Image 1 (cartoon, helix red, strand yellow):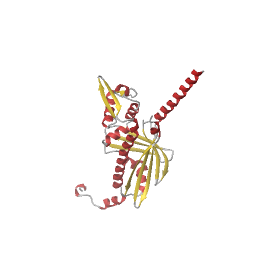
Image 2 (cartoon, rainbow over the protein chains, first blue to last red):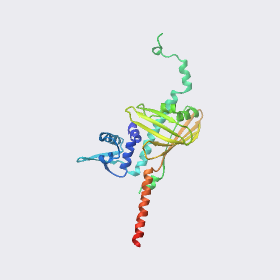
Image 3 (spheres, chains in turn orange, purple):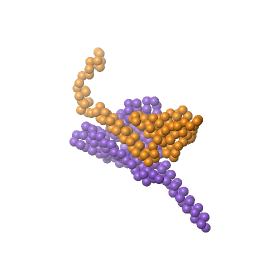
Image 4 (cartoon, chains in turn yellow, red):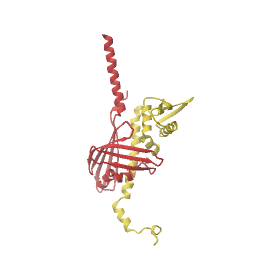
Length: 123
Length: 149
């Protein structure tokens, strides 16, 4: 599962609401869109994001598109945990990069060193 | 019924050690300007943080995707012990559930070990449903008692 897709699935309020609704059982796209004041294409986009994150399944029966969670409710807690694990591991990566970039020791080195010639301003 | 499983808080622990002082890491975690520089899931996002670093006061982190979608995290500080420990609530704005984040900053020689514990609680909706269930039981009991009279 890609990092962006898991993060996207976790963070968006509309998608969280859709997942909450689906915890009660299967629902049609029309039913899912009802509580939200957004267009049908927008709802379909949200559903595609959730499907790509592996959280829901969509099935078309005639003219009705039905959705359901792909994970049993019992497994969901574990799934949220694994999504958050990905989220935090990634944040810790970014913190590591930030701390390295702002390391006072390295900053000193930088100011001592002359910039490469192509970066030096021509006078 | 999965109530018991849902009701017990689940938590996850993630840790990492950095070659930096406790003070630097703690500041990176609590200074709004510094948070804004690293607290994003990827380069596709930009972050703006507002922090009122006082117990009982709030923080708010807006994470904006380059496509324009904004994801807000909001929460309240529960414990602040610079530079060792932070506890705060965590909620994606619009989500029904409040969760709890504990961050430990432990010195290890010249390095600092950061340990995040993220705990999930029963959502308010689960709690409401649980209460509804009880209400249903009481109503059924009432009816049963009435039918016996």
